[in-house]
Image 1 (cartoon, rainbow, N blue to C red):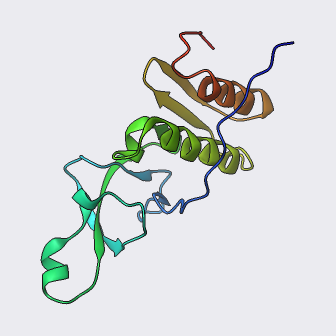
Image 2: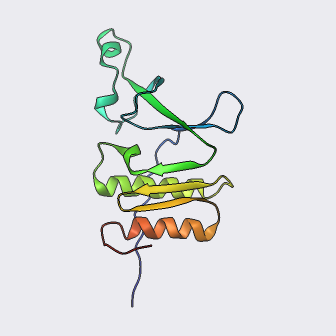
Image 3: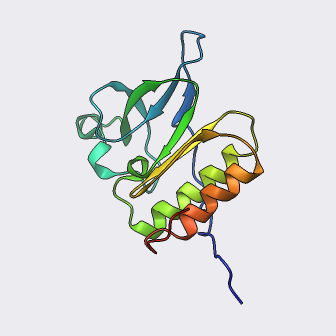
Length: 143
């Protein structure tokens, strides 16, 4: 008997997906390590300590995290690097949650993980293909 075991989805805030303020079809996706500074948000346990605004902490303004964005078209990309600082299982679990959450809508989204890139699309078959890619990550099998 053969089966595929998907990563356990780990819920987290999907606030890194926001619509462009211009009213266009642009979207902003936060990615650690980009050069486009977007603003600050409250620290959530599990956030990378590299993104903490330490000067604000020293001023007594509490823990805040620096946000960086890249503006792209209306198609969203789930990217391995969105979860910088997490180990492989934690990244896969968070990406699994994102796939399940975004698959409920009609907006196209894609997946970029090391060795695999699935173009943005919608639908049950697309969702299952992404979940299979996450389940087989590191196994050397092509999806």
